[in-house]
Image 1 (cartoon, rainbow, N blue to C red):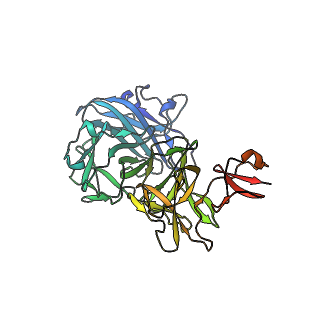
Image 2 (cartoon, rainbow, N blue to C red; image 1 turned 30 degrees about the horizontal axis):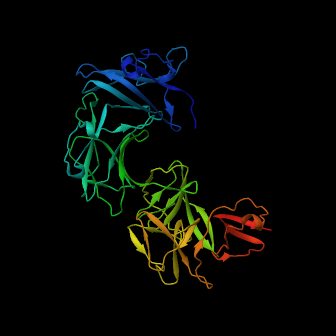
Image 3 (cartoon, rainbow, N blue to C red; image 1 turned 90 degrees about the horizontal axis):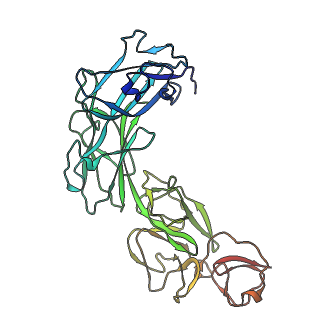
Length: 431
């Protein structure tokens, strides 16, 4: 990026958070560069007073360490300032923007962002309802509110109020963030809508989706380049993992596309079965109806965001289970179903693996996944192991006479010879 000069906000002390008035040397008030021509600064904790005659003034000026004046906008005269006021007393976050090509300046005062809505039939159309205040995401121009999913809820509508704003002098009453057209549809986990502060009654609309989700977030973000608010809605699916053999692990599946890329502490894998062996593939997004294997260092719960889109992966043999079901051993002609467990068919505990579903069917919970494997000519093995090969040691048979060895295709071997086997849930090589 090209930056010939540093720029700084100078003006009334109240709107530069109490620092020295009209001083170009205040480092804390330097604007942050976005690209070659756009800059911004966000200042929190500005205590402002509402008055029709109390106008707050500022300039954007060239930063000067010696506090002298260099290039400045809107002009070089002392009285050439940008001026705004607010409609109610309180603490504000001020968003300053500056575009150098046209020397265009903007300021947005934010006191409270309030969701006004008919969420879950409550009809709380209130511009200052403390139950629906949005929370600012630290160090950003983004405000969010999290809401639980509502069982059987119908479509609902909302607006967002930015309380206390009058804006520029003579431009009063623009207090709502509203869409550019009537009843703009927002898709959970999808599109955002760019809007301006408006004074009419248009609303955003959210249609409840067919898939299950636990909670969703409404976000109002001020676009620092375009100088417009962007409103979006994102749904999340919660997942808790079980502790099995010192590992938090589980399968996941949903009827929605999901995105694992920003879920901290969680690893997602797609699984491909080839010649009786599982091949793990990293999963950042997951196409609706597909499954994934999840591992983590804690149980969670993890909030997995619904994605706007994802690509179907024909190599992924994991299939989503979207509602509690008694899964058949052969869910489709020519295929066998396997579920992740360490419980063998006889009820005893075995190595953690994908075990063949019972002939009478296996009950599986919603939000999980099963492994769908094409039948081989030799038939379907009882279970399919997975995981990395452990250390390659020369294990003597005398030391493990109380254990059972299994081949990679699940056959129990009484007297193993040289080769790769599963022993107590681990891959070992006997030389």
